[in-house]
Image (cartoon, rainbow, N blue to C red; front, top):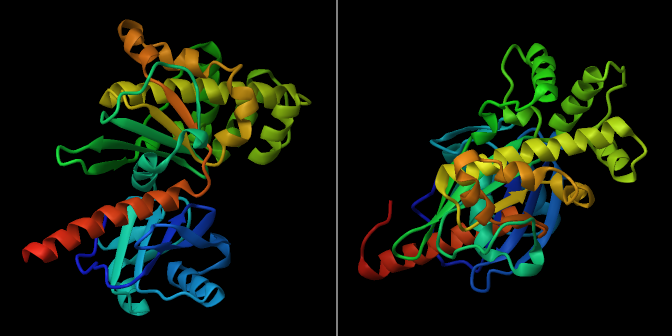
Length: 342
């Protein structure tokens, strides 16, 4: 994550954004109350770059661009930012200077998703099995959208929350049965021999799975967008679509369970992104939880860890705001003590 050390609290508002491969969500945050308003969603494809989108937001919402903090769907390290599933790329310093910003913070989108966990109330999540979460222990968050995002959240001894962004969505996908080996074979041919989890567990992944499962059943089906596959599965009018979603949830469960073991996430595993909330009616009857817990000698640990689907709107922007709030608190403390935070 890239943090600008010039951040200070001399202005009342900041602009926050959650930028995915398809949509860019912008909002204004009150730096005293941390209430979010003036939310607007732009299609990334309609803008040449981030600067143009920020200018459009400023003009349409009549806001000042002074402090800006964004979450973006790619690694956020160093000055040069290149989105993974979209063409936007920019220099952090160049964008700050071009827009005359006082400060500009850039977070990986799943660092922001991880920070959002502390803002959620019970009504903004749906629990999917497991025991009771243990406070102040590590959490994992993953989300299927344009890609597959992964992050973790840990509590530091001083009470701060530290997000740990990662690129776990690009880890190898491991098939577990005969049908999954057939799916792997189909996708390996399509993607030059390597199949990552994101090739299945994303919106485009649903489209890949639909074709792969049809191949497994020796059926020819036309390509369908993920939205249509999901809708057909929910209504039950397309057996291949239903099987596709069931396979999606089975593989998602295995992947989420692996994340739980990796960092012993007794604080819970949270599922974000745009795909799963739309498919919730089919999740309870799927193999998601069975596969989550199917961890051999560590099945007892997996069984104890709860999973939650995040249903809150604009969780990413809330996570950015939470990170900004924590950064402001430290900046104010450093100014009081006469030290500089780098």
